[in-house]
Image: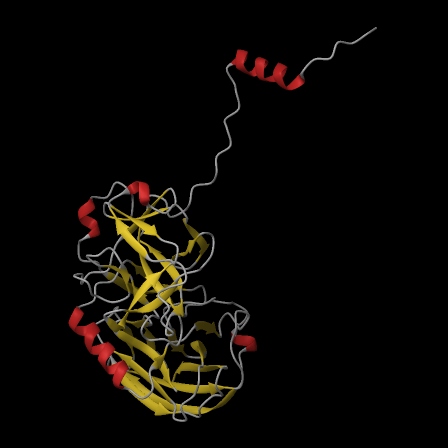
Length: 383
């Protein structure tokens, strides 16, 4: 018997249509930043002009890393179908990467997207890559402008990674006034009882765009410019816990140091080292002008100690395989109002990395803070 050839695909579609059960079309997964509000911050360890600086959008529409061009409040961004948005303005990127926010939605670039997830949000990508650079502004070389491309040709341009810090309550339905309201920073430490009866500390840090005063920023920039050595910020901050010797915290922004009897939670700070000047100093500065700090100890004062280490910590470092301590660097006390401590250290070799460990010295001493550049808070290395 001769069989008649039948177009199978068209027959199946006809049957599905007749039954009213046509399959839904496939959709591309939504970008996780779509219809969210978020702040942006630049990452480049070793450059105090750009590292951990929030993004500002000036009156000209350009993006800066410090208050300038008529703005003193860091911007609140959103994403819509690959377009980066501030209020009713859309980011337009020209051939050399100059990025200007304009009211013309048709001129907007549609190449922005979220990259890998981080512990506070996502990396921001342009054209699928981390291709952003920050260059000194033409009228003020202490303020850097952001480009998503080659930049302005200044030899001091620096490549940057960009973190998108997502507010937990953000949504596209938020009023436009949220984009111009004063932003806040919240950090809290919570105690949780463990099955052993010991006290375990967890640190929660919710980050939304930062407001910095122009005066404070100008002072910080002036101090950095006049100093023979500028502060390096850690590119790696890792917690190690004696109660969980095989656990890996990953890279965090909030150091935690704590001792309860024989249990220790220590923090290892790792720095990328550029050309060394010949004089090196480790400096800790904490006060109440930035994120809240948490300090506990006898009479409200915690006691802590610093060590230099024999090798560099990495993503696989845990308490059980932590680098050996070479020597004690120094000791310091801290209270809820903050602390200042500086000590000379042996200079590492140029163009290498170096790690230091912070540990509580006495029982029940506890310290947590947020490493930030504006205002300057945390542990820095000057070389």
